[in-house]
Image (cartoon, rainbow, N blue to C red; front, side, top):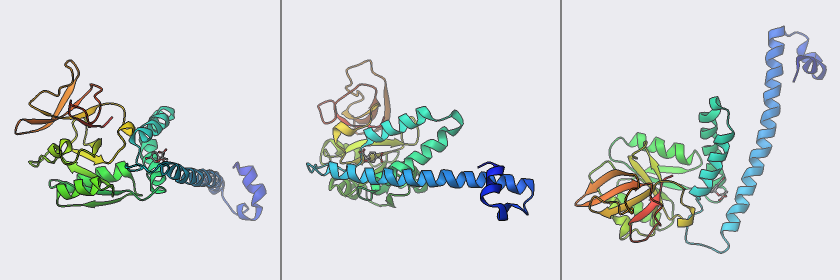
Length: 253
Ligand SMILES: C=C(O[C@@H]1C=C(C(=O)O)C=C[C@H]1O)C(=O)O
């Protein structure tokens, strides 16, 4: 709102103000108007997200409502429209917005297992899933996997430790998919959940394979994350299909 307009709308409020105070009040009035618009749009988005949740109930599927592919598309679209200096702010805000959208379909429960540097892993989960999620640290990776396999929520598990929990992704926890990596180019923890394989993010696949070979058809780039008794957890650029013989257990974008 311009200073002249402010004076017109609130003459009694503005008569004793210095020009600096008037300028500040005008800018704050502008922010109030933007906030009103944001509030209306945010609440509209939340109610649409709730309707998307009902649409996912029919037919009732075995997967959680979290759709990493859709979240990735929403995020990419927003970041491509953001001014360069706003990219970090937009990323952080949209993580929150999408987190609250998902919460309208049921609060996301996240169990984090990270025996070393737990706060760093907890913070990574909080940034990824937002304030809407209920996040807690747990002591037993197998219990966290069981929790995720029962469809009660998702698990974030550290991989830079001596516990090769990830071997189970090809055995007893084959209903779970890795859908996110935390900690940089070579992730130090992975998120797993009962994610519809069709809803995994586009990009790097996660593979658990016997021997040092990712079985990715050769030529495709590959990053090793961990090994244990001849088994390898790695990332690959090869577009493998989750659940098939190549040992693909998910994708992290
Ligand atoms: C709204 C949806 O559900 C969840 C919330 C999303 C959002 O708020 O944008 C996106 C993906 C899902 O994790 C959806 O699947 O479109």
